[in-house]
Amino acid sequence: MKFNKQKSPQAEKEFGGTLGATCIPVFLPLTVLYLLCVCRSPAASVLQWPPVLPPTAQLWDPLAPVLILGWMALQSFFYLLPMGKVSEGMVLKDGSRLKYPINGFHALCVTAVLLTLSLWLGMPLGYLFELLLPLAVCAIGVSFLLSLYLYICSFWAPHHALAQGGNTGNPLYDFFMGRELNPRIGSFDLKYFCELRPGLIGWVVINLGMLMKEVELRDSASLAMILVNSFQLLYVADALWNEEAVLTTMDIVHDGFGFMLVFGDLAWVPFTYSLQAAFLVVHPQSLSLLGATAIVTLNGAGYYIFRKSNSQKNQFRRDPTHPSVANLETIATATGKRLLVSGWWGLVRHPNYLGDLLMALAWSLPCGFNHLLPYFYVVYFTILLIHREARDERHCRAKYGLAWDSYCRRVPYRIFPYIY
Image (tube, rainbow, N blue to C red; front, side, top):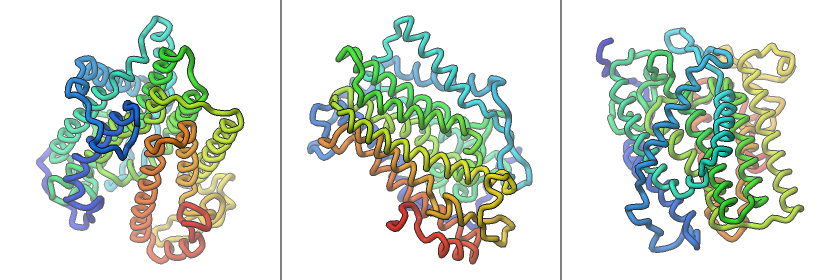
């Protein structure tokens, strides 16, 4: 295959352009390490000055790279096993469709069996608490190396395989956004694998390690820790059970696979989404039955909105004639596709984001109200979803034109009904 330097003539820069693509790969890894340090400190104050800095020795452990690479290899092995079905992705620029193994939930179940067996044999899973910083450092290192590999290999990819947004000709920006849309090694899809496997399942394993550490320290797991573990396990299990739905998301369909997604999948998700569980190891919280019931109800409501709205959207995308969506009101577009303006998607433009944010709040509430750190996820996720909604808005307006304006008049609220 020939060397491909051709750039996209219509690429529009996002995330602050070159400046953002230069600063974010420095700032976000440092943020991960800083949050983990704060989480382990007695004060757990994100506003403490001077900031909490660990000794250099705490950033490295020779066991950490073995665990990270072993974990990646194990999940890669599960990915390649002939479990589950094979599904086709969306139509690509050249008219083809890639095939994807839908076996993420199987991988989660097999991982759970192996973890159960390992715990029964006496594996000290609680030691993950001591290894959090070295593991994060190694995950960040792997993210940079994989991103560099992807950037270099993208120059041998055919032009139709490149992502428009990451093919600008600016090396820093393209490294960050990702030049190639669906980089593969043979049939092994690197972006699809990283999207849901090592980071998401790793998040669950880290949470369980924090629970086991609490058991070591206090002889039992607290109700707060159990709720955090249960809520987030449900979220991950749901994502993997509905793994096929990821094939229609912006990450897979639109964004190239560069540092932005690589780092998010392999480092940001497992080590910042698990902050509540890590926080509870050092800062135990007591919950009343009434408080726990209210939090469970909030999480349940968020999950119901999240799952129902996503299922409706995915079913409509796959088969608009299906009985569950055939009677929903729609608006025709010049592209031949139709926009939903009833059901969940007639309430707000992104009801799935609303459910996501309700769940995010429920994950943080078990940590009490004395510290800001456990609410970092809620704040970050709100900013992320508002930014993602703005990206969706730009893409849809460019794609659907006047039909999108009609849709916005019919569904004026973006995420929060009658608020935003």
